[in-house]
Length: 387
Picture 1 (cartoon, helix red, strand yellow):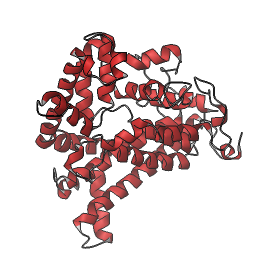
Picture 2 (picture 1 turned 30 degrees about the vertical axis):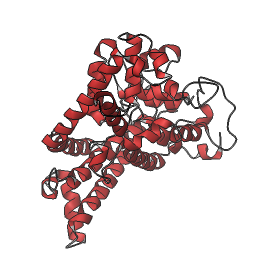
Picture 3 (picture 1 turned 60 degrees about the vertical axis):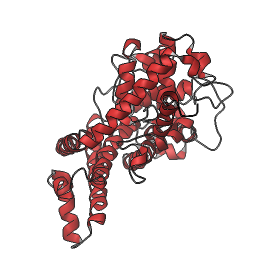
């Protein structure tokens, strides 16, 4: 056990005890296996493409709205903060945070819904499974194997991003058949940290983006318990502060409160369980890293507000409706005409209309950025557009 590992909690996932990689490789002399995983994710094509993939707003709607890339970086920062305070492996938590959205298609949840509907007869579409597919098959950077050849622990965390997978389907089931990820158990504490960090970042930063887009007002946000308390604190400490500074200051304080709550509640749960090692976390039968009951209720109120005032806003719905039609048309055209796919994709697709063709077309579309999907749609439907 290395000196840094001796400082970790007994239940932390230890890089020195990793179950290894599917394809054996020599260890790196300067980086731990989880640091290496993080670096491979950062250098992947799928990660770079997140720059032009929608969080809520399509890329051309403004330069200051969050994308999947900026969201993933923010999740990673929060995950490292929580992991450090819980004495967990920060590098594994960061790697999982950076990888958690690799499988998202263009246009956010609208894109996922469009591909899931198109793939209904072929197992559906799930972005967690697509993330796993990217890092185990679709990335082609290495001479000796497909994918990134990440450690078992990182793959486990990606597959179980939302908890145990008790009825696996699609690619997660296919991959688990040849390389078991113990899908029915919980993931390690670091993966649970990445998941709660995603929730913290998602809700708070969507509040800020929604305010910037003028979908709701600061006064309306102030009616929510947790953001309202933060707003009052800022106004008391900084009388006359501008609205421009007020919103980000509110978000900063709410994130801090949520991190503090997660650390306190998770410490309480872990102390009560007192697991001997990381496998004790996996076998606990419940999530060990999470919010207190009071914070869960406050977070639920924010989530409900965002669903009503942002995700179902007519402007967002109009954009998402158009986005769905773009992907539906692309899938229909390419599934019926795989000869229009680029080299490499065309050979893998095989004959038109087959399940194999559907899966390859889905992979091709899921990897697109918002910008590329719109350009491809125009090339394939506009007679005056260059092919």
